[in-house]
Length: 569
Ligand code: PEP
Ligand code: MG
Image (tube, rainbow, N blue to C red; front, side, top):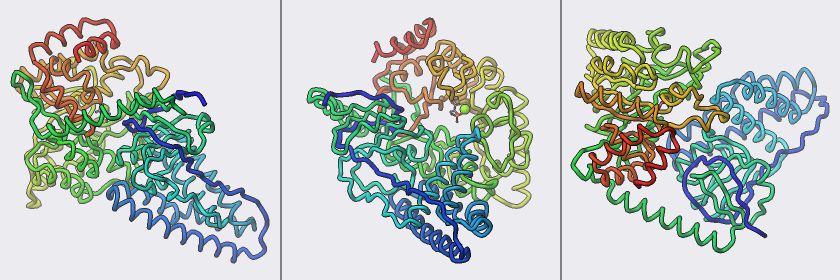
Protein backbone atom coordinates (compact mmCIF):
# COMPACT_ATOMS: atom_id res chain seq x y z
CA UNK A 1 0.00 0.00 0.00
CA UNK A 2 1.31 3.46 -0.85
CA UNK A 3 1.66 6.23 1.69
CA UNK A 4 -1.14 8.76 1.75
CA UNK A 5 -1.32 12.15 3.46
CA UNK A 6 -4.75 13.23 4.70
CA UNK A 7 -5.53 16.70 6.03
CA UNK A 8 -7.76 17.39 9.02
CA UNK A 9 -7.75 19.79 11.94
CA UNK A 10 -4.94 19.77 14.49
CA UNK A 11 -6.69 19.75 17.87
CA UNK A 12 -3.94 18.71 20.30
CA UNK A 13 -0.25 19.15 19.43
CA UNK A 14 2.42 16.47 19.15
CA UNK A 15 3.67 13.89 16.68
CA UNK A 16 2.98 10.16 17.02
CA UNK A 17 3.51 6.92 15.10
CA UNK A 18 1.36 3.95 15.92
CA UNK A 19 -0.97 1.18 14.82
CA UNK A 20 -4.56 2.11 14.04
CA UNK A 21 -7.37 0.62 16.11
CA UNK A 22 -10.94 1.56 15.25
CA UNK A 23 -12.99 2.53 18.26
CA UNK A 24 -16.13 0.80 17.11
CA UNK A 25 -19.28 2.46 18.22
CA UNK A 26 -22.34 0.34 18.01
CA UNK A 27 -25.45 2.26 17.20
CA UNK A 28 -28.08 -0.37 17.86
CA UNK A 29 -30.63 -0.85 15.12
CA UNK A 30 -33.84 0.51 16.54
CA UNK A 31 -37.09 -1.23 15.76
CA UNK A 32 -40.50 0.15 16.53
CA UNK A 33 -43.32 -1.93 17.96
CA UNK A 34 -46.32 -1.38 20.15
CA UNK A 35 -46.46 -2.43 23.79
CA UNK A 36 -49.54 -3.45 25.76
CA UNK A 37 -48.16 -3.09 29.25
CA UNK A 38 -46.88 0.49 29.30
CA UNK A 39 -46.18 0.41 33.06
CA UNK A 40 -43.80 -2.47 32.51
CA UNK A 41 -42.12 -0.64 29.60
CA UNK A 42 -41.69 2.52 31.70
CA UNK A 43 -40.20 0.39 34.51
CA UNK A 44 -37.76 -1.17 31.98
CA UNK A 45 -36.69 2.31 30.92
CA UNK A 46 -36.30 3.46 34.54
CA UNK A 47 -34.13 0.44 35.35
CA UNK A 48 -31.95 1.18 32.32
CA UNK A 49 -31.61 4.83 33.27
CA UNK A 50 -30.41 3.72 36.73
CA UNK A 51 -27.80 1.45 35.11
CA UNK A 52 -26.66 4.33 32.89
CA UNK A 53 -26.35 6.51 35.99
CA UNK A 54 -24.19 3.88 37.68
CA UNK A 55 -21.92 3.61 34.61
CA UNK A 56 -21.56 7.37 34.32
CA UNK A 57 -20.87 7.84 38.02
CA UNK A 58 -18.06 5.26 37.79
CA UNK A 59 -16.67 7.00 34.72
CA UNK A 60 -16.83 10.33 36.51
CA UNK A 61 -14.81 8.87 39.36
CA UNK A 62 -12.07 7.37 37.16
CA UNK A 63 -11.85 10.62 35.21
CA UNK A 64 -11.53 12.61 38.43
CA UNK A 65 -8.67 10.36 39.56
CA UNK A 66 -6.84 10.59 36.22
CA UNK A 67 -7.57 14.11 35.08
CA UNK A 68 -9.03 16.10 37.95
CA UNK A 69 -12.34 17.49 39.07
CA UNK A 70 -12.92 19.85 36.17
CA UNK A 71 -12.66 17.18 33.46
CA UNK A 72 -14.81 14.88 35.60
CA UNK A 73 -17.39 17.66 35.70
CA UNK A 74 -18.15 16.99 32.02
CA UNK A 75 -20.11 13.93 33.17
CA UNK A 76 -22.31 16.05 35.39
CA UNK A 77 -23.96 17.34 32.23
CA UNK A 78 -24.55 13.70 31.12
CA UNK A 79 -25.91 12.74 34.52
CA UNK A 80 -28.18 15.77 34.62
CA UNK A 81 -29.80 14.67 31.34
CA UNK A 82 -30.73 11.42 33.08
CA UNK A 83 -32.68 13.42 35.67
CA UNK A 84 -34.16 15.86 33.18
CA UNK A 85 -37.97 15.73 32.96
CA UNK A 86 -37.78 17.25 29.45
CA UNK A 87 -35.73 14.23 28.38
CA UNK A 88 -36.42 11.10 30.45
CA UNK A 89 -39.82 12.44 31.60
CA UNK A 90 -40.78 13.05 27.98
CA UNK A 91 -39.79 9.47 27.08
CA UNK A 92 -42.02 8.07 29.82
CA UNK A 93 -44.95 10.25 28.71
CA UNK A 94 -44.61 9.08 25.14
CA UNK A 95 -44.39 5.40 26.14
CA UNK A 96 -47.65 5.84 28.06
CA UNK A 97 -49.43 7.95 25.44
CA UNK A 98 -48.20 6.30 22.28
CA UNK A 99 -47.80 2.72 23.60
CA UNK A 100 -44.50 2.22 21.81
CA UNK A 101 -41.31 0.42 22.93
CA UNK A 102 -38.68 2.29 24.95
CA UNK A 103 -36.00 1.92 22.24
CA UNK A 104 -37.96 3.74 19.53
CA UNK A 105 -39.10 6.46 21.94
CA UNK A 106 -35.58 6.97 23.31
CA UNK A 107 -34.10 7.26 19.80
CA UNK A 108 -36.84 9.71 18.79
CA UNK A 109 -36.61 12.01 21.85
CA UNK A 110 -32.80 12.00 21.74
CA UNK A 111 -32.80 12.93 18.07
CA UNK A 112 -35.29 15.76 18.62
CA UNK A 113 -33.39 17.25 21.54
CA UNK A 114 -29.97 16.93 19.98
CA UNK A 115 -31.13 18.48 16.68
CA UNK A 116 -32.68 21.35 18.58
CA UNK A 117 -29.42 21.96 20.52
CA UNK A 118 -27.25 21.54 17.43
CA UNK A 119 -29.26 24.17 15.56
CA UNK A 120 -28.41 26.85 18.14
CA UNK A 121 -25.64 29.19 16.99
CA UNK A 122 -23.66 28.77 20.18
CA UNK A 123 -20.73 26.30 20.26
CA UNK A 124 -21.35 25.47 23.90
CA UNK A 125 -24.94 24.39 23.19
CA UNK A 126 -23.78 22.43 20.14
CA UNK A 127 -21.45 20.51 22.43
CA UNK A 128 -24.48 19.72 24.63
CA UNK A 129 -26.09 18.19 21.51
CA UNK A 130 -23.16 15.75 21.33
CA UNK A 131 -23.52 15.03 25.05
CA UNK A 132 -27.18 14.09 24.73
CA UNK A 133 -26.50 11.87 21.70
CA UNK A 134 -23.86 10.09 23.76
CA UNK A 135 -26.28 9.59 26.66
CA UNK A 136 -29.04 8.43 24.29
CA UNK A 137 -26.74 5.86 22.73
CA UNK A 138 -25.75 4.60 26.16
CA UNK A 139 -29.42 4.03 27.05
CA UNK A 140 -30.06 2.31 23.70
CA UNK A 141 -27.07 -0.04 24.13
CA UNK A 142 -28.25 -0.97 27.60
CA UNK A 143 -31.84 -1.50 26.43
CA UNK A 144 -30.61 -3.70 23.57
CA UNK A 145 -28.14 -5.64 25.74
CA UNK A 146 -25.23 -4.88 23.38
CA UNK A 147 -21.75 -4.91 24.90
CA UNK A 148 -19.98 -1.61 24.13
CA UNK A 149 -16.45 -1.42 22.66
CA UNK A 150 -13.90 -2.86 25.03
CA UNK A 151 -11.13 -0.27 25.56
CA UNK A 152 -8.78 -2.96 26.93
CA UNK A 153 -8.25 -3.96 23.28
CA UNK A 154 -6.13 -0.86 23.00
CA UNK A 155 -2.45 -1.67 23.38
CA UNK A 156 0.03 1.03 24.39
CA UNK A 157 1.14 2.82 21.22
CA UNK A 158 -2.25 2.44 19.51
CA UNK A 159 -3.71 5.30 17.54
CA UNK A 160 -7.43 5.43 18.16
CA UNK A 161 -9.48 5.95 14.99
CA UNK A 162 -13.14 6.86 15.34
CA UNK A 163 -16.03 8.53 13.63
CA UNK A 164 -16.22 10.81 16.63
CA UNK A 165 -15.12 10.52 20.24
CA UNK A 166 -17.18 11.67 23.18
CA UNK A 167 -15.56 12.64 26.49
CA UNK A 168 -16.99 9.42 27.92
CA UNK A 169 -14.85 7.53 25.37
CA UNK A 170 -11.65 9.53 25.87
CA UNK A 171 -12.02 9.07 29.61
CA UNK A 172 -11.71 5.31 29.11
CA UNK A 173 -8.43 5.48 27.18
CA UNK A 174 -5.91 3.21 28.90
CA UNK A 175 -2.48 4.75 29.52
CA UNK A 176 -0.07 4.83 26.57
CA UNK A 177 -2.42 5.77 23.71
CA UNK A 178 -0.24 7.41 21.06
CA UNK A 179 -2.82 9.64 19.37
CA UNK A 180 -6.44 9.96 18.37
CA UNK A 181 -7.83 10.71 14.93
CA UNK A 182 -11.49 11.22 14.08
CA UNK A 183 -13.80 11.93 11.17
CA UNK A 184 -15.77 14.60 13.01
CA UNK A 185 -15.19 17.02 15.86
CA UNK A 186 -13.77 20.48 16.40
CA UNK A 187 -10.91 22.00 18.37
CA UNK A 188 -13.32 23.19 21.03
CA UNK A 189 -15.03 19.81 21.49
CA UNK A 190 -14.71 18.42 24.98
CA UNK A 191 -12.87 15.36 23.68
CA UNK A 192 -10.24 17.64 22.12
CA UNK A 193 -9.83 19.50 25.39
CA UNK A 194 -9.35 16.17 27.16
CA UNK A 195 -6.75 15.07 24.60
CA UNK A 196 -4.79 18.25 25.30
CA UNK A 197 -5.03 17.62 29.04
CA UNK A 198 -3.80 14.03 28.60
CA UNK A 199 -1.04 15.23 26.23
CA UNK A 200 -2.30 12.98 23.41
CA UNK A 201 -1.88 14.39 19.87
CA UNK A 202 -5.25 14.69 18.13
CA UNK A 203 -6.23 15.18 14.49
CA UNK A 204 -9.95 15.68 13.97
CA UNK A 205 -12.25 16.38 11.04
CA UNK A 206 -10.75 13.83 8.62
CA UNK A 207 -14.18 13.05 7.17
CA UNK A 208 -14.85 9.85 5.26
CA UNK A 209 -11.12 9.35 4.74
CA UNK A 210 -11.02 7.42 8.00
CA UNK A 211 -12.91 4.58 6.31
CA UNK A 212 -9.76 3.80 4.34
CA UNK A 213 -7.84 3.11 7.55
CA UNK A 214 -7.77 -0.57 8.54
CA UNK A 215 -7.04 -1.92 12.01
CA UNK A 216 -3.29 -2.48 12.28
CA UNK A 217 -2.32 0.08 9.61
CA UNK A 218 0.62 2.25 10.54
CA UNK A 219 -0.26 5.91 10.97
CA UNK A 220 1.71 9.06 11.59
CA UNK A 221 -0.45 11.67 13.31
CA UNK A 222 0.72 15.26 13.46
CA UNK A 223 -1.49 17.18 15.90
CA UNK A 224 0.31 20.43 15.17
CA UNK A 225 -0.21 20.46 11.40
CA UNK A 226 -3.51 18.57 11.55
CA UNK A 227 -2.42 15.81 9.15
CA UNK A 228 -2.10 12.06 9.17
CA UNK A 229 0.02 9.85 6.93
CA UNK A 230 -1.50 6.46 6.26
CA UNK A 231 0.94 3.55 5.69
CA UNK A 232 4.07 5.73 5.47
CA UNK A 233 7.06 4.40 3.50
CA UNK A 234 10.07 3.44 5.65
CA UNK A 235 11.85 6.70 4.80
CA UNK A 236 8.92 8.91 5.92
CA UNK A 237 8.54 6.82 9.06
CA UNK A 238 12.22 7.21 9.83
CA UNK A 239 11.99 10.98 9.31
CA UNK A 240 9.00 11.19 11.61
CA UNK A 241 10.82 9.18 14.30
CA UNK A 242 13.76 11.56 14.06
CA UNK A 243 11.43 14.54 14.31
CA UNK A 244 9.71 13.01 17.38
CA UNK A 245 13.09 12.50 18.97
CA UNK A 246 14.14 16.06 18.10
CA UNK A 247 10.93 17.49 19.58
CA UNK A 248 11.36 15.37 22.70
CA UNK A 249 14.95 16.52 23.18
CA UNK A 250 14.06 20.16 22.55
CA UNK A 251 11.24 19.96 25.03
CA UNK A 252 13.35 18.21 27.63
CA UNK A 253 16.16 20.72 27.23
CA UNK A 254 13.76 23.65 27.43
CA UNK A 255 12.02 22.07 30.45
CA UNK A 256 15.34 21.55 32.24
CA UNK A 257 16.00 25.25 31.94
CA UNK A 258 12.40 26.25 32.53
CA UNK A 259 13.08 27.00 36.18
CA UNK A 260 15.50 29.72 35.19
CA UNK A 261 14.10 33.20 34.60
CA UNK A 262 13.52 34.36 31.06
CA UNK A 263 16.12 37.11 30.68
CA UNK A 264 17.36 38.38 27.33
CA UNK A 265 21.07 38.12 26.54
CA UNK A 266 21.43 41.82 27.47
CA UNK A 267 19.57 41.47 30.75
CA UNK A 268 15.90 42.41 30.16
CA UNK A 269 13.53 40.29 32.22
CA UNK A 270 10.46 39.08 30.34
CA UNK A 271 7.69 37.51 32.42
CA UNK A 272 6.39 34.32 30.84
CA UNK A 273 2.93 33.51 32.13
CA UNK A 274 0.21 30.92 31.44
CA UNK A 275 -3.33 31.36 30.16
CA UNK A 276 -5.86 29.20 31.98
CA UNK A 277 -9.57 28.52 31.73
CA UNK A 278 -10.16 26.84 35.07
CA UNK A 279 -8.36 25.84 38.29
CA UNK A 280 -7.72 22.41 36.70
CA UNK A 281 -5.25 24.04 34.31
CA UNK A 282 -3.02 25.19 37.18
CA UNK A 283 -1.15 21.89 37.28
CA UNK A 284 0.04 22.16 33.68
CA UNK A 285 0.94 25.83 34.24
CA UNK A 286 3.10 24.90 37.23
CA UNK A 287 4.66 21.88 35.50
CA UNK A 288 5.76 24.12 32.65
CA UNK A 289 7.08 26.68 35.13
CA UNK A 290 4.75 29.57 34.43
CA UNK A 291 5.91 32.62 36.37
CA UNK A 292 2.33 33.63 36.97
CA UNK A 293 -1.05 33.60 35.28
CA UNK A 294 -1.45 36.23 32.58
CA UNK A 295 -5.07 35.40 31.77
CA UNK A 296 -7.63 33.42 33.74
CA UNK A 297 -10.71 33.32 31.49
CA UNK A 298 -13.46 33.26 34.10
CA UNK A 299 -16.32 32.75 31.67
CA UNK A 300 -15.81 28.98 31.82
CA UNK A 301 -17.00 29.12 35.41
CA UNK A 302 -20.21 30.66 34.11
CA UNK A 303 -20.48 28.42 31.02
CA UNK A 304 -20.16 25.23 33.04
CA UNK A 305 -22.96 26.28 35.37
CA UNK A 306 -26.65 26.32 34.66
CA UNK A 307 -27.20 29.47 36.70
CA UNK A 308 -25.13 32.50 37.72
CA UNK A 309 -22.28 31.20 39.89
CA UNK A 310 -22.55 32.48 43.45
CA UNK A 311 -19.98 34.65 45.21
CA UNK A 312 -18.85 31.63 47.26
CA UNK A 313 -18.51 29.36 44.21
CA UNK A 314 -16.40 31.99 42.51
CA UNK A 315 -14.21 32.56 45.57
CA UNK A 316 -13.44 28.83 45.68
CA UNK A 317 -12.24 28.80 42.07
CA UNK A 318 -10.20 32.04 42.28
CA UNK A 319 -8.68 31.12 45.63
CA UNK A 320 -7.38 27.78 44.31
CA UNK A 321 -5.47 29.53 41.56
CA UNK A 322 -4.21 32.38 43.75
CA UNK A 323 -2.96 30.02 46.44
CA UNK A 324 -1.20 27.82 43.89
CA UNK A 325 0.81 30.81 42.68
CA UNK A 326 1.61 32.39 46.06
CA UNK A 327 3.16 35.81 45.55
CA UNK A 328 3.33 35.47 41.76
CA UNK A 329 0.80 37.56 39.78
CA UNK A 330 -2.52 36.01 38.81
CA UNK A 331 -4.43 38.10 36.28
CA UNK A 332 -8.11 37.26 36.54
CA UNK A 333 -10.23 38.59 33.72
CA UNK A 334 -13.78 39.59 34.54
CA UNK A 335 -16.67 37.98 32.68
CA UNK A 336 -16.34 38.07 28.87
CA UNK A 337 -19.62 36.74 27.46
CA UNK A 338 -21.43 37.70 24.29
CA UNK A 339 -19.68 37.42 20.94
CA UNK A 340 -19.23 33.68 20.39
CA UNK A 341 -19.83 32.86 24.06
CA UNK A 342 -23.49 32.54 24.87
CA UNK A 343 -24.86 31.79 28.32
CA UNK A 344 -28.24 30.07 28.11
CA UNK A 345 -29.44 31.31 31.50
CA UNK A 346 -28.42 34.92 30.73
CA UNK A 347 -31.07 34.92 27.99
CA UNK A 348 -29.02 37.27 25.84
CA UNK A 349 -31.08 38.66 22.98
CA UNK A 350 -30.00 37.60 19.50
CA UNK A 351 -27.81 40.20 17.83
CA UNK A 352 -27.03 40.83 14.17
CA UNK A 353 -23.30 41.30 14.89
CA UNK A 354 -22.55 39.63 18.22
CA UNK A 355 -18.82 40.41 18.11
CA UNK A 356 -19.69 44.10 17.74
CA UNK A 357 -22.48 43.83 20.25
CA UNK A 358 -23.31 43.80 23.90
CA UNK A 359 -20.39 41.69 25.12
CA UNK A 360 -17.82 41.60 27.93
CA UNK A 361 -17.45 44.86 29.89
CA UNK A 362 -20.46 46.35 28.07
CA UNK A 363 -22.69 43.57 29.40
CA UNK A 364 -21.15 43.78 32.89
CA UNK A 365 -21.58 47.53 33.24
CA UNK A 366 -25.21 47.21 32.23
CA UNK A 367 -25.74 44.38 34.72
CA UNK A 368 -24.07 45.78 37.83
CA UNK A 369 -25.54 43.16 40.18
CA UNK A 370 -24.01 40.27 38.21
CA UNK A 371 -20.75 42.19 37.81
CA UNK A 372 -20.59 43.13 41.48
CA UNK A 373 -20.97 39.50 42.59
CA UNK A 374 -17.81 38.76 40.63
CA UNK A 375 -15.99 41.85 41.90
CA UNK A 376 -16.88 40.97 45.52
CA UNK A 377 -15.65 37.41 44.98
CA UNK A 378 -12.40 38.74 43.51
CA UNK A 379 -11.79 41.22 46.33
CA UNK A 380 -12.40 38.48 48.89
CA UNK A 381 -10.34 35.80 47.11
CA UNK A 382 -7.55 38.31 46.46
CA UNK A 383 -6.36 38.10 50.09
CA UNK A 384 -5.04 34.60 49.29
CA UNK A 385 -2.48 35.68 46.71
CA UNK A 386 -1.26 38.35 44.29
CA UNK A 387 -4.41 39.29 42.39
CA UNK A 388 -4.53 41.50 39.31
CA UNK A 389 -8.03 42.24 37.95
CA UNK A 390 -8.43 42.74 34.20
CA UNK A 391 -11.44 44.16 32.32
CA UNK A 392 -12.06 42.83 28.77
CA UNK A 393 -13.09 44.69 25.58
CA UNK A 394 -12.50 48.14 27.02
CA UNK A 395 -12.55 50.98 24.53
CA UNK A 396 -12.93 54.17 26.57
CA UNK A 397 -11.89 55.93 29.75
CA UNK A 398 -15.50 56.13 30.90
CA UNK A 399 -15.80 52.31 30.88
CA UNK A 400 -12.66 52.01 33.01
CA UNK A 401 -13.90 54.62 35.47
CA UNK A 402 -17.32 53.00 35.76
CA UNK A 403 -15.80 49.53 36.27
CA UNK A 404 -13.46 50.91 38.93
CA UNK A 405 -16.36 52.73 40.60
CA UNK A 406 -18.26 49.43 40.89
CA UNK A 407 -15.13 47.77 42.25
CA UNK A 408 -14.92 50.44 44.95
CA UNK A 409 -18.63 50.06 45.66
CA UNK A 410 -18.10 46.33 46.15
CA UNK A 411 -15.18 47.05 48.48
CA UNK A 412 -17.22 49.52 50.58
CA UNK A 413 -20.02 46.95 50.91
CA UNK A 414 -17.58 44.27 52.05
CA UNK A 415 -15.84 46.56 54.50
CA UNK A 416 -19.20 47.50 55.96
CA UNK A 417 -19.86 43.78 56.39
CA UNK A 418 -16.51 43.52 58.18
CA UNK A 419 -15.00 41.31 55.45
CA UNK A 420 -11.31 41.50 54.60
CA UNK A 421 -10.53 42.65 51.04
CA UNK A 422 -7.45 42.70 48.81
CA UNK A 423 -5.98 45.69 46.97
CA UNK A 424 -5.42 44.25 43.52
CA UNK A 425 -3.78 45.95 40.58
CA UNK A 426 -6.40 46.89 38.00
CA UNK A 427 -5.82 46.68 34.27
CA UNK A 428 -7.47 46.29 30.90
CA UNK A 429 -7.24 44.11 27.84
CA UNK A 430 -6.32 46.00 24.72
CA UNK A 431 -8.27 44.07 22.12
CA UNK A 432 -10.30 46.77 20.40
CA UNK A 433 -8.40 48.97 17.92
CA UNK A 434 -9.82 52.09 19.61
CA UNK A 435 -8.11 51.09 22.85
CA UNK A 436 -4.77 50.56 21.13
CA UNK A 437 -4.99 53.84 19.24
CA UNK A 438 -5.82 55.76 22.44
CA UNK A 439 -3.58 53.63 24.67
CA UNK A 440 -1.75 56.79 25.81
CA UNK A 441 -5.02 58.07 27.31
CA UNK A 442 -6.18 54.75 28.78
CA UNK A 443 -2.75 53.97 30.26
CA UNK A 444 -3.18 56.86 32.70
CA UNK A 445 -6.15 55.11 34.30
CA UNK A 446 -4.73 51.63 34.94
CA UNK A 447 -1.86 49.62 36.46
CA UNK A 448 -1.30 47.38 33.43
CA UNK A 449 -2.48 46.59 29.91
CA UNK A 450 -2.56 43.18 28.23
CA UNK A 451 -3.00 42.90 24.48
CA UNK A 452 -5.57 40.39 23.30
CA UNK A 453 -4.44 39.69 19.77
CA UNK A 454 -7.24 37.21 19.10
CA UNK A 455 -9.86 39.93 19.12
CA UNK A 456 -7.54 42.79 18.15
CA UNK A 457 -6.74 40.91 14.93
CA UNK A 458 -10.36 40.25 14.01
CA UNK A 459 -11.37 43.86 14.65
CA UNK A 460 -8.34 45.40 12.94
CA UNK A 461 -8.53 43.21 9.85
CA UNK A 462 -12.35 42.95 9.82
CA UNK A 463 -12.00 39.16 9.67
CA UNK A 464 -14.21 37.06 11.97
CA UNK A 465 -11.92 34.89 14.11
CA UNK A 466 -14.26 31.89 13.80
CA UNK A 467 -15.11 32.07 10.09
CA UNK A 468 -13.14 29.52 8.03
CA UNK A 469 -13.82 31.42 4.81
CA UNK A 470 -11.87 34.46 5.96
CA UNK A 471 -9.25 32.41 7.83
CA UNK A 472 -6.52 33.27 5.27
CA UNK A 473 -7.05 36.98 6.09
CA UNK A 474 -6.92 36.44 9.84
CA UNK A 475 -3.29 36.62 10.94
CA UNK A 476 -2.07 38.41 14.06
CA UNK A 477 1.35 38.90 12.43
CA UNK A 478 -0.21 41.51 10.10
CA UNK A 479 1.84 44.73 10.26
CA UNK A 480 -1.37 46.66 11.06
CA UNK A 481 -1.83 44.59 14.25
CA UNK A 482 1.86 44.86 15.11
CA UNK A 483 1.75 48.63 14.75
CA UNK A 484 -1.08 48.73 17.30
CA UNK A 485 0.99 46.50 19.58
CA UNK A 486 3.96 48.89 19.31
CA UNK A 487 1.70 51.89 19.99
CA UNK A 488 0.27 50.22 23.09
CA UNK A 489 3.70 49.25 24.42
CA UNK A 490 5.01 52.80 23.95
CA UNK A 491 2.05 54.23 25.85
CA UNK A 492 2.60 51.73 28.70
CA UNK A 493 6.29 52.55 28.85
CA UNK A 494 5.56 56.27 29.03
CA UNK A 495 3.21 55.75 31.98
CA UNK A 496 5.54 53.24 33.64
CA UNK A 497 2.99 50.41 33.59
CA UNK A 498 3.33 46.78 32.47
CA UNK A 499 2.62 45.95 28.80
CA UNK A 500 1.65 42.31 28.37
CA UNK A 501 0.14 40.12 25.69
CA UNK A 502 -2.25 37.22 26.28
CA UNK A 503 -3.56 36.55 22.77
CA UNK A 504 -2.38 33.45 20.86
CA UNK A 505 0.43 35.43 19.19
CA UNK A 506 2.26 35.60 22.54
CA UNK A 507 2.75 31.82 22.48
CA UNK A 508 4.29 31.64 19.00
CA UNK A 509 8.01 31.04 19.60
CA UNK A 510 8.87 32.26 16.09
CA UNK A 511 7.46 35.67 17.01
CA UNK A 512 9.11 36.03 20.44
CA UNK A 513 11.98 38.19 19.21
CA UNK A 514 9.71 40.59 17.31
CA UNK A 515 7.35 40.85 20.30
CA UNK A 516 10.23 41.75 22.61
CA UNK A 517 11.38 44.25 19.99
CA UNK A 518 7.92 45.82 20.01
CA UNK A 519 8.34 46.49 23.73
CA UNK A 520 6.37 43.80 25.57
CA UNK A 521 7.33 43.01 29.19
CA UNK A 522 5.10 40.01 29.71
CA UNK A 523 3.91 37.18 27.45
CA UNK A 524 1.08 34.83 28.45
CA UNK A 525 0.27 31.60 26.60
CA UNK A 526 -0.94 27.98 26.83
CA UNK A 527 1.27 26.21 29.32
CA UNK A 528 2.89 23.78 26.85
CA UNK A 529 4.77 26.50 24.95
CA UNK A 530 6.22 28.27 28.02
CA UNK A 531 9.60 26.42 28.13
CA UNK A 532 10.22 27.04 24.41
CA UNK A 533 9.31 30.73 24.60
CA UNK A 534 11.51 31.18 27.68
CA UNK A 535 14.38 29.65 25.73
CA UNK A 536 13.71 32.06 22.82
CA UNK A 537 13.78 35.00 25.25
CA UNK A 538 17.20 33.94 26.52
CA UNK A 539 18.54 33.92 22.97
CA UNK A 540 17.21 37.41 22.22
CA UNK A 541 19.15 40.64 22.30
CA UNK A 542 16.75 43.56 22.82
CA UNK A 543 18.58 45.98 20.49
CA UNK A 544 18.60 43.47 17.66
CA UNK A 545 14.99 42.62 18.44
CA UNK A 546 14.02 46.26 18.18
CA UNK A 547 15.65 46.56 14.74
CA UNK A 548 13.86 43.38 13.65
CA UNK A 549 10.51 44.69 14.94
CA UNK A 550 11.04 48.03 13.14
CA UNK A 551 11.69 46.06 9.97
CA UNK A 552 8.55 43.94 10.52
CA UNK A 553 6.40 47.07 10.78
CA UNK A 554 7.44 48.10 7.28
CA UNK A 555 6.49 44.77 5.67
CA UNK A 556 3.36 44.62 3.53
CA UNK A 557 1.77 41.41 4.68
CA UNK A 558 1.75 38.89 7.55
CA UNK A 559 3.50 36.24 5.43
CA UNK A 560 6.40 38.65 4.95
CA UNK A 561 6.57 39.27 8.69
CA UNK A 562 6.53 35.54 9.35
CA UNK A 563 9.31 34.81 6.88
CA UNK A 564 11.35 37.64 8.38
CA UNK A 565 10.80 36.09 11.82
CA UNK A 566 11.80 32.62 10.54
CA UNK A 567 15.01 33.94 8.93
CA UNK A 568 16.05 35.08 12.37
CA UNK A 569 15.22 31.82 14.12
C1 PEP B 1 -7.94 37.81 22.95
O1 PEP B 1 -8.93 38.32 22.43
O2 PEP B 1 -6.79 37.84 22.46
C2 PEP B 1 -8.05 37.08 24.24
C3 PEP B 1 -6.99 36.65 24.87
O3 PEP B 1 -9.30 36.86 24.71
P1 PEP B 1 -10.29 35.70 24.17
O4 PEP B 1 -9.50 34.83 23.23
O5 PEP B 1 -10.76 35.02 25.39
O6 PEP B 1 -11.35 36.52 23.48
MG1 MG C 1 -10.75 38.59 23.58
